[in-house]
Image 1: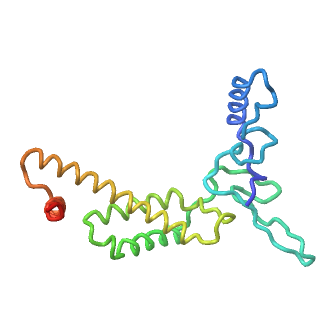
Image 2 (image 1 turned 90 degrees about the vertical axis):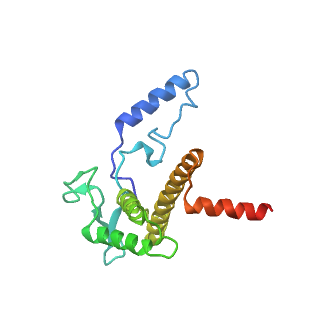
Image 3 (image 1 turned 60 degrees about the horizontal axis):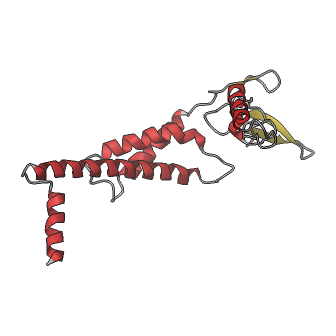
Amino acid sequence: MTWEHIPIDDVKTRKARDAARELFEDDEDTAHTEYDEEDPKHNKYVKVNFPPFFHYSVDADSNPIVVGKSHWKGDLETGVFSKDHGQMTNKLAHMFIKLCERYATRSNWRGYTYNDEMRSQALLQLSQIGLQFDESKSQNPFAYYTAAITNSFTRVLNVEKRNQNIRDDILEINGLNPSYTRQGMSSGSQHYDE
């Protein structure tokens, strides 16, 4: 994983320096931001769609040789940086679909009427973050993708519960019967209050 071949975002760098100068006009030593040249943070670079890297091969003398670069079009010597280079393969997309389908059949998710919405939200989330898995931070992409799916399913569940509570409140205000879930909660709470 490296940011060596990613160009510096001049607009971001310029804006950050101007903002720092305005804040600290009298003290030049404190006007340091993450966009300064000497700062190694990646925030000063052009934003890319997944973490940049080099591919290496080892020659007969055990010396590493760069054989490929992410975000790069053309050969290593005459190629150029490409901000949007690299896309999800069909195979990875099918794997994401299978992951979501399999996760949706788990016992704690399969009974919901909005299971399809949960799956579609999880697929949308995976398509947005799928290429952003950082191999330098973890060796388990399956856990990364499963966590994203779990969070998407839980998010949809919480939104649906909130909507159901609002709907039940409106029904009760108008003197109508709320959902069976709310009725069960009401009778259960009366039972425990006695």
